[in-house]
Length: 80
Picture 1: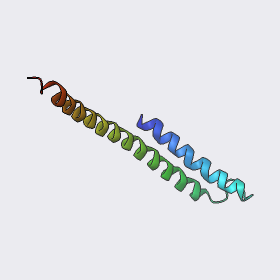
Picture 2: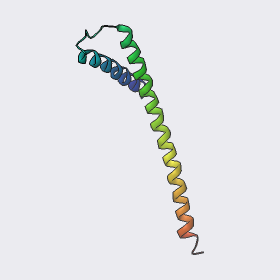
Picture 3: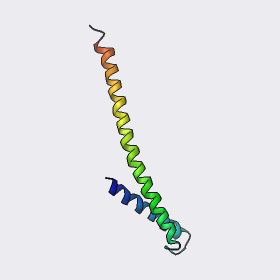
């Protein structure tokens, strides 16, 4: 998954820079270092997004377990 996220982010950064140059009617590869910078930032962004999603899922699972335990205490332990 990290390799695919890195590639998707790099393509996103490259596409953003090329789209920016196309909107301004400039040559696509006007400053090649901007494309490298865009690809790097896109890769970092995509990898951080994957990490954030995994952390969010983990936190959600913890919250759901706590809520389930609280509901079981509230509704099933009162009868005893």
